[in-house]
Every structure is written in structure tokens, then in C-alpha cells.
Image (cartoon, rainbow, N blue to C red; front, side, top):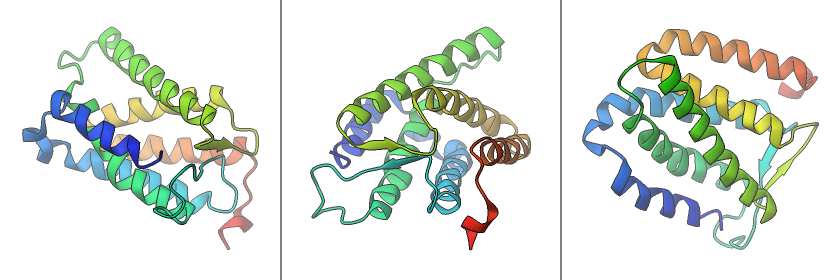
Length: 174
């Protein structure tokens, strides 16, 4: 099932992504990739959420292969769709509705994934935290698209907040 999502997202991108603007979106796509790889590295031994095997254990033999599949297919494709439709008028209301819509969409996908056993929560993480995280993530993607340095600074603060909130010890990095 983990392999199905990238295919579905790619097919959706044929309708809703502006692939001709790929070079404009590329830095923010990389920002998303780095963010997910950083999570995979920093939280490897103490995950808050984890993508699980479902039906394709022979195709994707490890959790790392699932993470890499998502990191280099689903997340970049969804970032391109997201940026392709980002409101051009920079009003708080339009951005807020757009970010809320994407957060609900991601939350819905995650809910289905949770019901199918494709994702598990650990160390106090739950659907509520995922919705908060999604709202922050989509806000950061919009900020990064316009002001990358500010997005990196906010990201570091958010990582430290999560690190502190979920009582993650630096010994885990050894």
C-alpha cells in the first residue's frame, strides 16, 4: 500500500501541479526533503510516528526504504501540487483557508493510513499532534517559498520545541 500513494499523487499532479514551474518550486521541494530526512535521522531511535510495512514487504524490505520512498516521491510531488495552487494574493484569510485545507487533507490521508496500519504513533504522538504538525509544515512551506531563511529559522525553533515537548534526550543521537 505504501507504493500506491506515490502513484496516486503523481496522477493527481498531472491535473493540479504546474510542472513548468518546477525550478521555482525546487528549493522548497528540497526543504521538504531535508526536513523529512532530518526527522528520519534525529528520531530514528525514538520515533514519534513511523511508517509501517503493509502488503509489500518483499518490495520495500525495511522501514528506511519506506521513508526514502516517501521522501523522494510522495512528499516532493505533494509539495509541487501545494505550491502550484498557493494563493497569489497574500491575504491572511486566503493563506489560512488554504493551509487549513491542506492540513485537513493530510490529516485525512493519515487517518486512513492509520486505520490500514501504515503508520503508528509512539511516545505520546497522536492525531492531534499530527494536525498541528501539518499546519506548521504547510505554513513553513509557504514561508520557505517566499522567504527561505525565515523558514529555516522557524524550523529550527519548531524542532527544538518538539524535542523538548516529547522529552527527547540528546543521548539518542549517539
